[in-house]
Amino acid sequence: MTSDGQSVERLREYLRALKPDARATLMAELERGLLRGEAVAGGEFVLEELRSTIRAAAQTAPRLGDAARLFFAPFEPFLIDAKADHKRAGRLARSSLVSIWEWLGRDLMPAEIRALSDDINRALLANERVKVEQLIRALHDRAVQRIRDALGAVGTDERAQRRFAVQVGTPRALDDVAAVIRILDVRDALADLARRLPGNIRAFEREHIDGAKAMFDSEAAAWTLDGNPTRKSEFFLCGLVILMGRLAAPWQLTRIAVRAAGSDETARIAETPYAAAVTIVLSEIENMVGELRAELKAGRPVTAMLRGIHDAARSLRNEMDLPPDSAWGRQLAALRSEVSNLLRAEIESAPGRVRRLLRPRPNKDIVPGSLLDAADVGEVEALVAFVNACRQYGSELAVSEVTLRTYSELEHYLETGTKVLLDSLRHAGDDDRTFRQSQVDAAIRFCRTVFGSDYAGLLVKAADIAIQTGASERKQARG
Image (cartoon, rainbow, N blue to C red; front, side, top):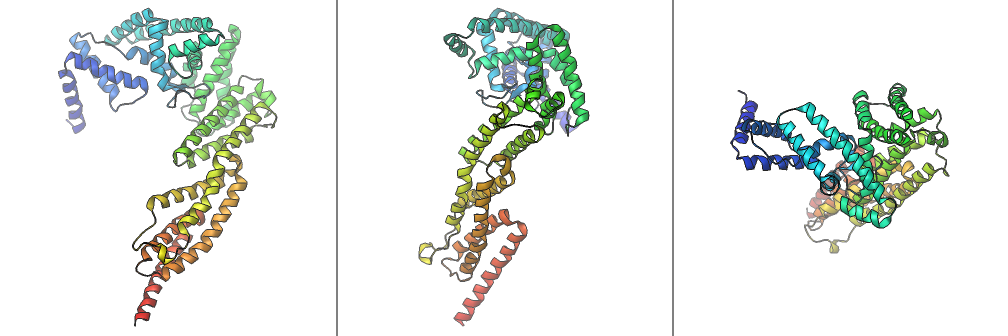
């Protein structure tokens, strides 16, 4: 037997040797973790082994997670690992699932949840998959009706809405519960769409656009005949989220809206159900702007985030005609303005921080053997890289002017300042040489970002020459 095979067999023996209570506890913890989206390596295998052991031992185990996990299985394409107070169209925070499930079982349909959960658990232990699917479908149908009744009772009464939010226990209770209904109401159509769509679409060009549109239109025709426009809009919103998840460039989703309208004019696009694609993309940009704000505040790198916002905004502006006075045009302009305000102060701070590190200092201000603080150098290097990224993406981030001005200032200072630093290194004595070397090293790192590796390589050689020349001159002076 191979080493892997031996490890698997030892794991099986360990699980079989567990006491019934320990098996039940382990199973419950694994299932809770899966419900929260906390993937555990080998977790599914361990669960199957535990179920098999329980079946063989005719053990009745308390089941705390399976029914919930199966109940939320249709939600997987729409779940996001973000804070529960997000505002992303067509999405549901994974962290909200536990609260929603507890609300269903505690306040909305406790008897049904208990009875159907027990039936589901027994069917799982007996490995009756068809029966499990039937029971989950029944649970979905009852949940949709009960949730609709609960929302109807709340209505527009603000006090009732606040009580409802407390009961559900999520920051966006009304939106989250509406998302549950929306997804469950068209779950069969969404599952069919998910099966038919390609797994990965590298470039969303005409062939793929027309194929996807045909799938959406065929489903939409059924909702139109059914006389249920709400279901039709629910299907388009959720289906377009699924489609977006298959695109290598998610922002190309708007192409299907332009294709459906036969025009890039916002008024024409807004008349089609595919307008939801634009809503989704704008919602994603808004979310990225929120994340950018948080990352900047925490002092973490944001280059990848800048590129994402740039690509999404550029795609919208390239694919569609967005008049400044249109609703979508105003929304995008407001987001770009917010990004500009977030970035401007950071960009403008870069030259000053570079100067503070690299400014020439008299010998009396230098402690013998001291160095520039490595953390400070790393932060400023990241800031210079940040300015460089803003320069690349400045057009869509509305920071082109400030970035070009700042970058020009950095170029000028580094070109002139490094010459002064090299000269100081050449004349450095034993007390200040280490510090001046650290300044030159920092300048080389900054120049690598601004001017490229070749330029930085020349500076390395220039620094070596400065050190050698200085040593030679000192030796001659002593002689």
